[in-house]
Image 1 (spheres, helix red, strand yellow):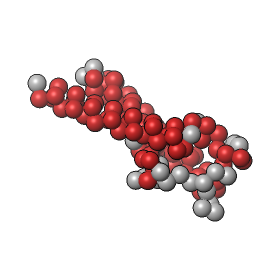
Image 2 (cartoon, rainbow, N blue to C red):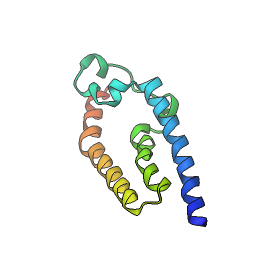
Image 3 (cartoon, one colour):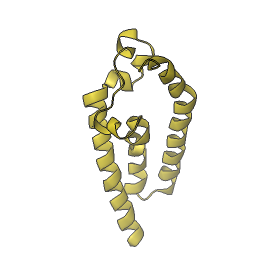
Amino acid sequence: MSLIVFFIALSVVFFVIVVISMYSVMRFFGTDRAAGLDHFDKSISELPYVKKGIYKYTNNGMYLYAFFIVYLPGLLLFSKAALLIAIYSHIYIWVHYFFTESLDMKVIYKAQ
């Protein structure tokens, strides 16, 4: 019974973090930039580096916090398979960040 309570509590914490992160993405960062348009559109890539909302606490709030959403189905359905897929997905997202996104960010935001 205590594992179920733990999973539900963790789901609530993750859900709150995801909502705050998504609000920050939509309000301060923009969905175009979140979708990667800043890597291809010079007018968007010239926008300043965001340091508001969740980004005030971390340089990359979307990768660090918003992707907690992938854990919610596994936690709420008590599914080991879904949790393994979530862990794999989150690792894969971070691999993309380190080998693609971070390199582009150094070029895009080099002057800031």
